[in-house]
Length: 167
Length: 80
Image 1 (cartoon, each protein chain N blue to C red):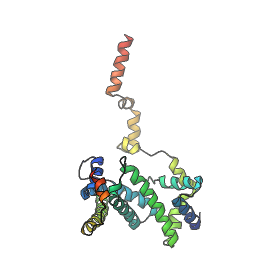
Image 2: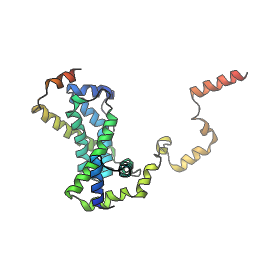
Image 3: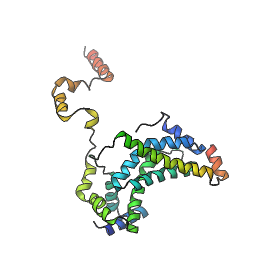
């Protein structure tokens, strides 16, 4: 999601203790949707996902005076969102809200087969090759394309140095 | 797994009393991300983002109208 400005994250965090609400707004624009989509994938509930994201940023605002010196926003958001997801499931189970939905949508995710997904590497092929699978195969079949990404200034310098040393 | 077992497991996890196997199971589940999920169009994403930001803004504006008392040490900490 596009954020509205390019202010470094640390500058925005430094502005929080001074009560700068625009800094919080910018941070929530940068990370809000990612957190929302994560919560939605885990809980299958738009309302819960929105509430969790809102509460995370509100608690950040409430505790802006007590942020540690080595505060890392990404680590904070990562730990908070995970904790909030587990808390949400636990509170739903305690209050017996949407039990059939939990049985159907959340509990299968705890099976051994489903948890094996976490061991698989993240698929980054899409970002490396911005075209379809057949075109990708053709791209790899052309031998010169295999060497093009390997050429860099560092590689050229190293190659020239080794040639000079050889001579 | 039944809902009762999940309730007990998540409760123990939140209290920090779960055994390592339970902790690993819950943390692995939290790390599992479905790769083939639907990608929302940009307009939908913006709409959701704006809704979240509007809720946060509403809360901040409310607290500015009716602020909580800030202690002297909080003001000094913020200054440094």
